Length: 238
Image (tube, rainbow, N blue to C red):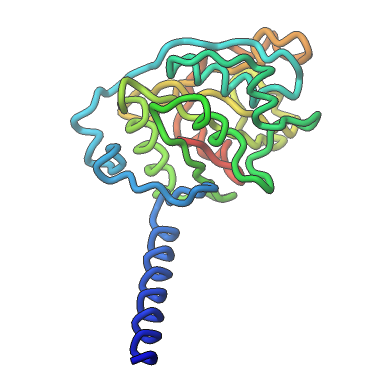
């Protein structure tokens, strides 16, 4: 009897690991401290779902200049929370995420600072992190577009957080100096062309601590394929 119980438990463990492996391999699998999110039935995350949703939609404009050169993460979280009906200052967000002089990282030993802070301060959406590889595939671009359209139409509208990794002579956000390597969080607030174009706001605009802030628009749009390239080696939270 004991051996049969052990065999049954072993089979259950094997099935569990097979399920985990399948979820991790699925396109757009979420990578977060709390595990993968099941989106079926909660959000429209397949390409076919876009047909029934608006071709363009934008959330509330909430851009605010980051109060320090390393505060793009706190500014982004503060902007997003206002779109979600909550008010949290950049300073409070920085404390919650343990932002350092180097900024707010994609992840740390405690998890994923940006989605963890967003989840602590609002209840409309359960944010998770989605990693983007260095060379995104066409399928990963489509997954991002699906996630974008799904979020902006979910429960009154939900923004995404993008974690840019801009490299010299590579694609950059609007107004960012193209000869510089830049890590930058930004609020993704809408889309056009059924997700093929991304709308976002940039906390560099008006930031007194950043010398090139005058060249950066508060609100911009870029081809979603370009945005995914900018997110490569980092990712986005949705």
